[in-house]
Image (cartoon, rainbow, N blue to C red):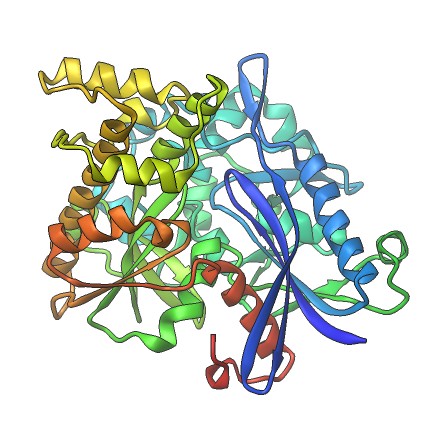
Length: 457
């Protein structure tokens, strides 16, 4: 029976259960189960279907056992900021709200009526965005205070999956740093801010580092998936970008930037200490946790979400919309339109075709005419935004960036890679498309006493 580590990797559009093993100095991956992740709108609120996602994860674990694998441990990574609330009896107080829900509208402005932006950044070091956990909690405090009254634990999405697997409630470091509620210097909860905001301290639990053993899978779940042995659950770099960066960091140096290219684009570099200067705040950088108590100094940029929404619309219309064909169409496009991908018009737009058209009309620029034009517009605009991000990094780091590693699904987009190279002038390399799952599994292996630095990807 072959022993494997399992990565449960949840993205904004889909999830995967991947088995990984290390043998002969090489890492081998096998995708066991893939499933969609669709937010569900009920009334005026957009939720994640956590119950379905948890069931799909168990299905993946059961499939791994049925394939004859012996599961050594499980690690879970997801997107950032979103969370579930657990009461004293261990019950989930409603499905987690999706970060694209608009219930936090106006809360950023309201917050900074009473808080100095530079002083706030000097402690939290977070790029202020309405999607951040802080503003969702303020919205719940005002609109559904009973939820906070009943809550015993706030668990970010990876922590939530781990809790229902093990019964243990912890907050993993890298995912907690996406909340805007962490002191960036100490890596601990900013209790002064929590108190100022009227949030209950008790819901903010113990922060654990990547590599920590959280617990073992409950007996009833082990029985359900067909395992008659203990399975550990390990805190990995639970923010998916933290795992992806961990996968490639040992192949890079201080002159290398990373671009995690998926639904979101996360562009930045790994640094030893947070950068909390007014210039960093003005440039829109956030200081998020990395493996090894380091910092991912990065910008959150709207990413392939725009292209994903266009593809979904074309498929709904019954048009063939496979990515290789669309990229080929875009390569033949002469469209030079560049839009601001960070504009709020695109953040929650499910009709992306309309959003791009309206943006172009508003700014008196040529609208794309064909599918190839739309794909070229998105890719060219992203590349120009990456150029701007690299220039900002250069102004804030001790030495200029010389190389860029693109990780995730965006690395498969040859057009985006070429345009990024042309826009930035950097050496551009594509890291493994499965960087997140690789980093997840390597951290589990490290917790198991193996040395991931000796492993070939």
